[in-house]
Length: 453
Image (tube, rainbow, N blue to C red; front, side):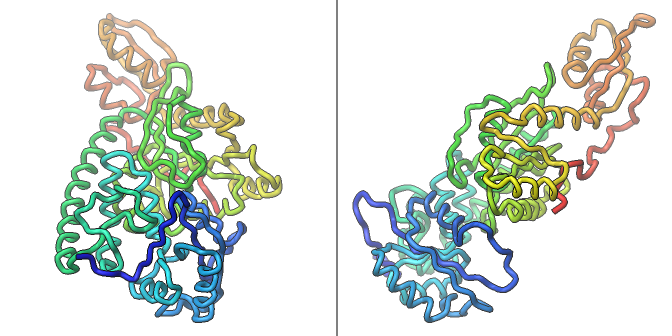
């Protein structure tokens, strides 16, 4: 027997859900240059709802009972009736009691920003790893909110055509469900720990190669850039969080010289902490990369704020110290040249590109090649002439500047990354000059192009 939760779901065959978008402007918040609640409207659109109206209230602090003031709640209730809206979407996190009180006051469903983003992740999760990560985030979010949720936990998360916010775990018998949730959370954490260890092993297996990871605000054009640089067939859509899974492809930055390039999940303002902690396995690529390419949508009026969001997110996942290059993407779509100049002034070593038209991609490729080359050691390797495997590897890993034969040995002067020193020795190569006894540390800190905002 299901317990009533106070949610009244009005179903209209063949119609997208209709939503009233609500925000609260508090003192000290960073201003947005875009239309009010525009990002929330795009999130709602991605989840399958139309944002019919946007209502913003200015307050010194949230109301402890309903988050918004009494007068504004009454205004929202009237707009819902007038617009025949199905739900209210609040651009902030609500406590369980605030959500319940708002639902009673407006006479319809209420979901907060975290619940909306979780719903999008349910829709977008494709791989087994992504589905596990999303399920864990949903379970952790649902645990204190079981009284508000409808569907029972034994339903597969994300299946079925439920309304927005109702695709996850729900309730039958609250105490029993809480035990089930806690047990499922433990099981999921164990499974994800195993997946993360496996992902770490995969990443380390590529450690002899130079690895680059694309990072940035959601919908900044990372997948389009991956396709433009590598030719990889990837899913591209003009929606927030179009892809959640990591895609890694080989990128030829010079004839015969390749690196690994990875695209991973985008960041967003107030990304739910449940998702950040759950997606650490996916974000391992960014943590372990040699270089990050920070893709910024130069046509977005809120680009500066987005840069700050990404930098904070990278710090939170332990990737704040990874060297990175800032890329101003979508310059072909910039409407205000002064805004682009402002961004370039704030990011003086950034590279302007258009992943869609190809503008600037040659400059970006050259910059990455120069960075890889600058990190190289110049060493002299002595080997047996018959060790063709080593000679071939040296030409693939670095740049052979000179080859000579001396006393029955082949001697090669090579510019190569420090990471390959141990591999050369394991392949019976003798380094006679230029390299330390042990592998050099590989952390130079921030490089030219890291944000100075």
